[in-house]
Amino acid sequence: MMKNVAILGSTGSIGKNALHVVRNLKDSFRVTGLSSHSQWEFLARQAEEFNPSHVALSDPQLAGKLKQCLSDRQIEVISGINCLKEIVLKSEADIVVSAVVGAIGLSAAIATVQAGKILALANKEALVMAGNIVIPLAKKNQILPVDSEHSAIFQALQSGRQNEIRRIIITASGGPFYDFPADTLADVTPAQALKHPTWRMGQKITIDSATLMNKALEIIEAKWLFNLGADQIDVVVHPQSIIHSMVEFCDGSVIAQMGMPDMKVPIQYALTFPERANLNAEPLDLPRIENLTFKKPDREKFPALKLGYLAVREGGTIGATLNAANEVAVQAFLEKKIRFTEIASFVEKVINYHHFIKDPCLEEILAADAWARQEIKKCLT
Image (cartoon, rainbow, N blue to C red; front, side, top):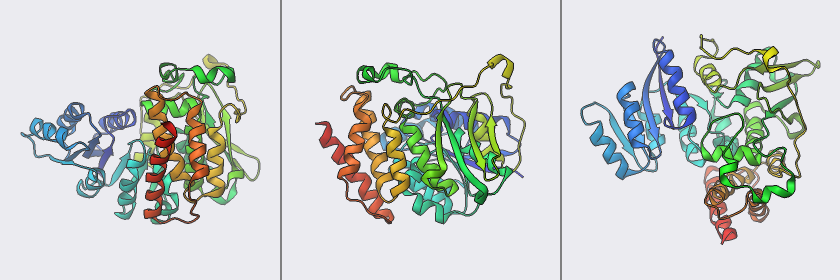
């Protein structure tokens, strides 16, 4: 049966890979919605190829250019701050791939699960901010992880039950600075931080990988996706990025999902679950790789990890505060306004100052997000 797919953030790395998957499975999937923040020309080319019923662009002025470019097609152009939510509801999608970055993906995630659609989730911030709201709205297997680590855990869990989990082991490449001496990190540049050793991603997530904040966010996301406590979530540094994560069950069995680094694999699994489809991925050649190595993460050198575990243990508004402060701090680093090591320290300062609410409603989560953005801007001045 043909399924309709909407891809939020289609001009980004995950979005482009998702369209590659759909292109190769064109007899099974049809694109009905696409969105971008500002890349209207690239979005126009995607729309011309896939001919969705709806496209969305955040900037109304750029949306006008997009509309003019697509004037010969029956494609509705949506713009404004609610455009992601609108495309979820208007595009008749069965599956929504949320590949946007940051807090902007929250409203679309809520709209997707409320509408009964499948949410293929790469936007981890939706659960980091409001897992207590999004998860109760979703039915079993309605949220399917796209992040390689969470997809690996989800796939490994097909070998057992959730109540049989002893722990999960999330792997991390370590980023470009894992072997750097701690006293040199303050002087690394954005250009250095953007050279990820394994993955090619957008700027924000690449910086998060360098600080290990991305692992902090993944720890929080794992709590919500798999109903786990902080003592059930471990992180190991695995520079080869061949084992994407592991699950240890109560009998001592450890199931690992392995493969060459390729985001098309978890994206396709989210789209085709519970089945698998052929994919022209690079085969795993272990003799050529020779060694798979693992190290404990250095939580003193990379303090972002401690903040992730704090958010898992305490819950409440810490996740929303952490995420918002980090978004602003990362942008400040990219603009060379703060040092690399100040990203996590400023985030921690904002978390410590914020008004903690244990079981927040959506309005309180959004208020914590807004407060954290303003507060960290004060720290930066």
